[in-house]
Image (cartoon, rainbow, N blue to C red; front, side, top):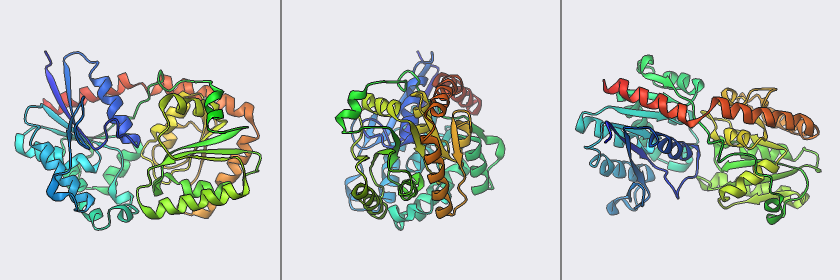
Length: 386
């Protein structure tokens, strides 16, 4: 018999997980369900599921702007949250479901801040006029929420700067975690061979979006010594412009080099860990990153990380200990030059990269366990309910 029933609201849920927020929701839910006297219902976008309450876009919104589709789905989800003690929403897509349920049923609404619309102006390319709607939805929900979980100290500062009317006492940092049993060294060279990958390589894993900085990495790679290979596990462009730009940059590199490999489809987990383990270096060139679970996943696989010094990345990647950081101040050309220099220097020092990788796994195991994340989250739930 549970004494606390939680309603998790999320856009992403298996099999439709394509970003860090989705990974977070899945692994947090699994960890919460391991706690005695806690029950969790998951309400997700994307239609019926066996292990969650799934909702499709209402038929009369089938041709609407994606932001309106999200709000219509939120209203349907909110109507089903009357039996939970607390609702916990993730990303702006789901925030309005939590907000409406809190008003309708007088239950606390907790938000996990994975990103902020005011800090992602390029989303206007994806959502067009819907960006104004998503921004309104996020602001309204955040300002009314009982509590906001920031996934890093940098994200907490961003929340308070973006929404100055929010009481700082209700914004708490609980960092993301990583499952270091799932993300562990997997030394299986047959996986690289399966993809035609040969020789030493660095790897990028992520969605094709402006914030992930992939275009910057590809331009930087033009000046990296040709002996170093690059694996790109990159797909799901969030709008046509960035998708075309990245595809053109990859094609240009592939015309000049034979060691650039682009994997467009989602890589199965065991293959992903083998590719991460086999890489000399994991590269995270994000220009906006609240925390960056993908860095933790690489660290779990004992791979050194080169990341940008933005958002929560410095809270994950210990500079000169588990990897290195590159400054980004908005100047793309300078950023690309710094990436080129760091990549070329690090790829020429395999012993240093092995040292960084070993330290990274230790850090991931000791500082970012999901059990601790779940316990801290439940403690917050109980405080806002009290």
